[in-house]
Length: 315
Image (cartoon, rainbow, N blue to C red; front, side, top):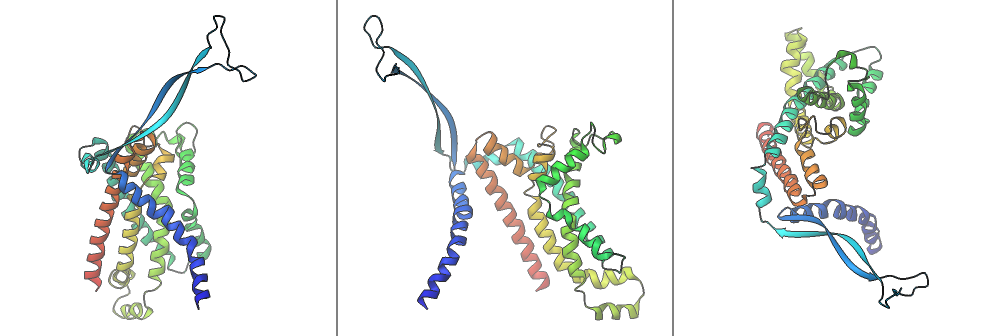
């Protein structure tokens, strides 16, 4: 019995170490530095050092004095200055944060409902008997398996205004601020609508046949059957999909990073993209950590409120 317990611990150890190293430690460390002003500066020192010849002996000048030269050393020095909640207070007064929140809000408010509505329409369509339905379903879900960076670079070539496949339209997909946010939203909808479609199709196929057959006795209208029978059955699934896509969309980073670089200007600079730039481009790591925890706190509050509402509604 003791031997089997040790074997269990042996198999669990890699997973525990992975979680501790790559999840728990970054969370704790980022929380720690979020209350500090972290500055990394290059320190330059100039020292006089003796000149050594090929034999390892010190070179003596004509006047009998040892020759010296100036040696320059450069070293990055990181300082931590406790700031309390100063970084978090700074979030409420930063115009860049306000602009990034606006970009993220516009993206979420368009992309998430668009993906769910299109996914629901496709689920209803593919729930019927269609020629080569299995093949079309397989083609529909292919975008899910592509990485967002690869998808963004693909659409960069499509939207490229000087020689791209859509260049003949004369539309500034990437150089105009309004068209740029539209392009980012369109790419996300293209990639994640199949996810909504797949989940909603599975839920739609789970609607009991008895309910549909009983509804057919009262009306032959497919729309009324869908509205009064299928849709109420789909509501819990729609809420779950909404929560998943909402939480994921708030972390928008990959597509604007590869497609527009946050531009033109800051037109597509999302909140996560701003946190990335602040920490890894401008090296203000403490403030970037505060940004990340601000997003985490906001998402936790919204998700908790949603789940409470769902629990009270479907309990």
